[in-house]
Image 1 (tube, rainbow, N blue to C red):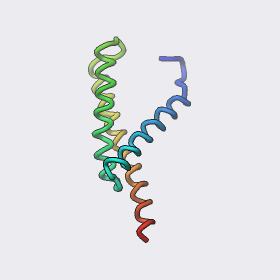
Image 2 (cartoon, rainbow, N blue to C red):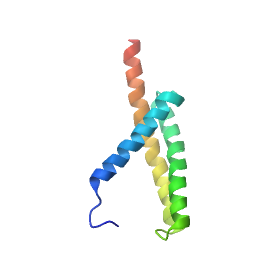
Image 3 (cartoon, rainbow, N blue to C red):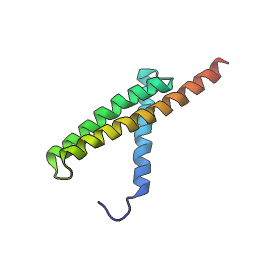
Length: 100
């Protein structure tokens, strides 16, 4: 650990970056405009990102055991689904107002 408290500004910036990444993917390439589509796509993207990062860290560094690595991948996948769902919901709300 870095210290007794994590640097919250960097946690915020990390979340902001990942939210922008999902929003760009959803608007430019995937056309996501519903909660369920955002949830599904968010889970897939976060699963692949978490798998990439966590398995690499497990392979190269002695930071965590395999169980913790797999639990983090699962937790990040669920979190990604929730974030993706919210982004999809917000993108869909903007679309409904344009049709009215």
